[in-house]
Amino acid sequence: MEEEIKWTHTIQALKDYAEAVRQTYKDNLYILNHIASGKLASTIDYAFEISNTHIDVSLRLEDYWKYIEYDTKPHFPPYKAMLDWVKVKFHGSLPNTYNGSLPTNSDTLEKRMAYFTQQKIGREGTKGSHALKDTIQEVYDDFSLRISQAVQQDLNEGIEAIMLTAFTSK
Image (cartoon, rainbow, N blue to C red; front, side):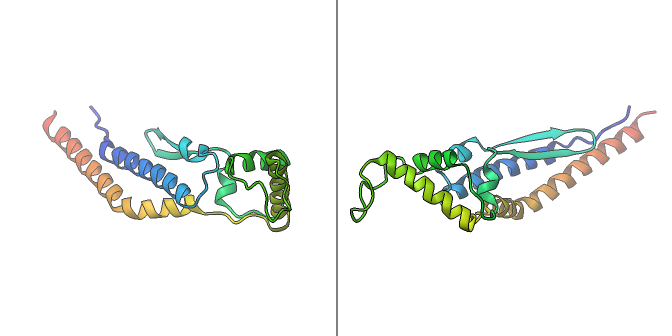
């Protein structure tokens, strides 16, 4: 009978790593105030794909994560998306007036803020947070030794099982 290495310790270390990335990224989004609706932070998840030749760990994120993560060149985002963002981001916290020049109608104020935000992005682009990249590096620095030790432990146990089988069966 052919023995296979069981990757029990490695899989657990990678699951712990993925959970730490998920939680730290969520925390970092809150710290950096990238929580307009909270949807991105609340839906972060991870997935595992395990086969005979590899173990893949991936994060599942909302499609718009990349606009928070990376710098963008000047562009004009859709006005509707800007209006929706303003409504969520400033939910009821917009001032009614500002030096008497802004309208007291919050709907009109939201529309103006969406327009001006869209124009600013059109002129300057956006600055990315790089929170995910920083999170992955930070957590990897904490977990790299643990993952290496788990791989070594699984290899040692696998080799021991193979050797035991080879020398005890005839």
